[in-house]
Amino acid sequence: MSELSSPSKVFNLFKEFNFHTNKKLGQNFLIDSNIISKIISAADLRSEDLVVEIGPGLGVLTQSIADEVSRVLSIEIDRKLQPILEVNLKEYSNTKVIFQDALKTDFDRLVYAEAGGKSRSYKVIANLPYYITTPLLMHILESKFNVELIVIMVQREVAERMTAPPGKKDYGALSVAVQYYTEPEIICRVPKTVFIPAPEVDSTVIRLIKRKLPPVQLKSEKLFFNLVRTAFNQRRKTVLNAMQGSNWGLMKEEWKIILEKAGIDPMRRGETFSLQDFAMLSNCVYETLKELSTVYQEGEQIPLY
Ligand code: SAM
Figure 1 (cartoon, protein in one colour):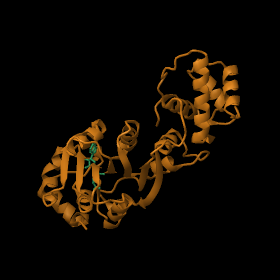
Figure 2 (tube, helix red, strand yellow):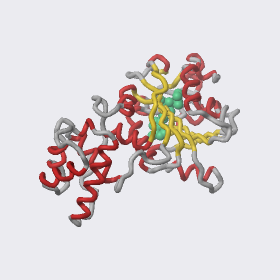
Figure 3 (tube, protein in one colour):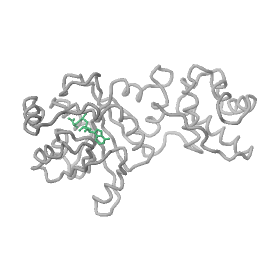
Figure 4 (spheres, helix red, strand yellow):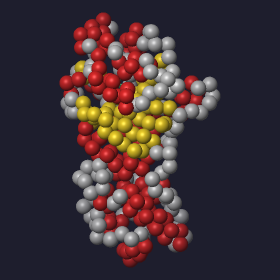
């Protein structure tokens, strides 16, 4: 196991390289070999795997991943970490660090170039600042990158939202999106004390296995997600009131017919809807708009989180 999981080694590195952690970049470095082992085992690494790591920091996870797989591409935004990473990854010839913003990275293109102009699937492992976790995940999932699975450290509450079933208070647009694209599973809880410096919140390691086929058949994915957003944006309203008050250009009577066709009680709240309920509803809306010869436009984009 990496000697970087020792606090004294980390403090020595800070001193030697005159490095100061940047709170804005969420630089809380992991120092617990047990948690590192759990992340590695959750990713079910094989020697032939290619792993894209996001936010290598000092390289503690990078070293452990590199011990298991043929190639690790790490994306780090902070160039000040370059001299430290050069030293810590000197012995790991199967690693490469790319200094850029992961949120602006086309992961497939990066892997394509690395694999000598061939498309291939890969795994993603990330321990990132929490404010970019959700945008990054949505970037990976919505872009439909060729990712097999993602193991990521997230704020505890975010892991609960991702895995929440319909009807629970944490269930929302993020739960639907994550559960539509992946099968999420909580791996372990992580206390603040295993980081230098300690963050303000507790964390959870979560694994998201990308689905090979969508769990529901949709006539329009965009329409589905716009409906989900509309429903959760007004989560205290019944679905009839939420839809009718939204920007869909359909009258209350039309919504009643749509809901009846979809077999959905108009008095239910969207927060109780399963993926199947949202799919039924969105497919019925799609058919109605088609009958009315209304070309479906994306409409107002309501933020997902
Ligand atoms: N993986 C290391 C560990 O477990 O100790 C470091 C984790 S630290 C929580 C987050 C890392 O992500 C930092 O090194 C930070 O500089 C990097 N980072 C922050 N924003 C980033 C972004 N947009 N793209 C790539 N890396 C980013």
